[in-house]
Length: 114
Image (cartoon, rainbow, N blue to C red; front, side, top):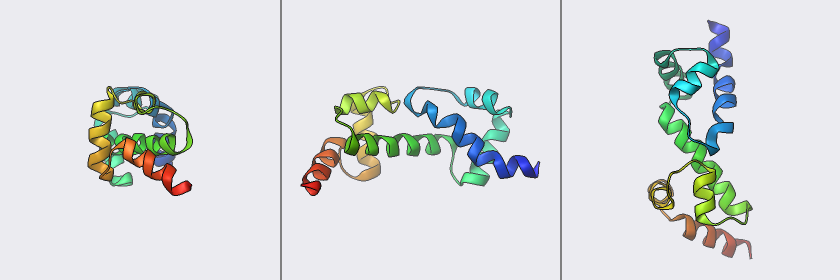
């Protein structure tokens, strides 16, 4: 059990990171790791100090920031690459987290680099 706790964060990240670009369910993660939903929720909360939903959202937003800064993609392309269902929803979530729209973030980052 102790080994499972020690290796869980890296195992969990390995199974969720490639999926940051597609929709997937908690059940998919449970099956790939081999634990129950209840165990997954408890372990993520205890070891990563956040909910599964928050962890996945944070990873998708971090990847979105990277894509906005480092790739020549439209906001819509970034939206779908990080697993959001619409550019409008993506912009709403992004603004709530970072206090600016994805367009403003990309524009300010480009201006700062000049």
